[in-house]
Image 1 (cartoon, rainbow, N blue to C red):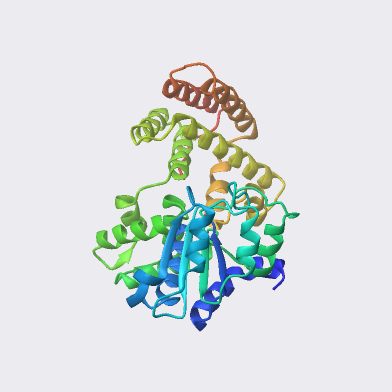
Image 2: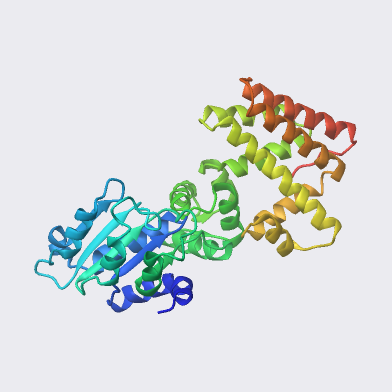
Length: 355
């Protein structure tokens, strides 16, 4: 199978293979959506080999410290009382293998026995492979690349609706979008937050107030609230949120990086509004898959001026340099910057309002 087709359709091929019960010899599973990766890896564990004989026919190897001899032995040993054996290798740098692997891997992977199903499992494939190498060309020919990225918002909304029904509840699409906005787009995290919201509702319907009552907001959502507080003239609220984030062991530089990114996104939303560009253009500009988030940005951007956003961006740049420089009191530095932003709101004569 040509590489472009393999890489683009790898996820679909893996799902199809699991449905049909026929498996290729080599899968490379990667991507940022851990929930789906682990789900399909578990499906391979359950379906490639008979669970009764799993102890004999499933080998799981940690990539760090793996030797060529260990991998070769795992591949060459025959399955016991089974047609197949499953070998899972986690966090092995396949495109930049350790010394000793470069020469043997292409030959090994190009001639895997029919009884082997070998899986390389990653969080994210880092860097670009060298397309000139024999290993790369071998992978083009024999590997199924199944990459699991975060779902689009509409897909997540439908999934949350199904999760709610499985828990004996219901959730409206708008409230599901709000949960994604508040809790992020990690399916692992959302599954846990949905269980909390389902346990909280007394009506069988999961509403925004149930979500606010028990769900834990991600950093981006807190920073959205924090910036709202600044533009609404509620400096004390903003400072309180910074204190809460630091108490939760969030790094000060990461907090401020998120604040800076949010100001930049507000600036993008303001420019889009002035150019009469729509929600889709804004999503493309900021690299977001969430129409709900884009709408919230558009609403927030209407409350501030371009002049204030430029001032805020300049303050962010100055503070970023200070935070990464000498040993300053980082929390106080962030609070002083927020105070300067709040003062600029007043001096620009903008009216306070709430989202």
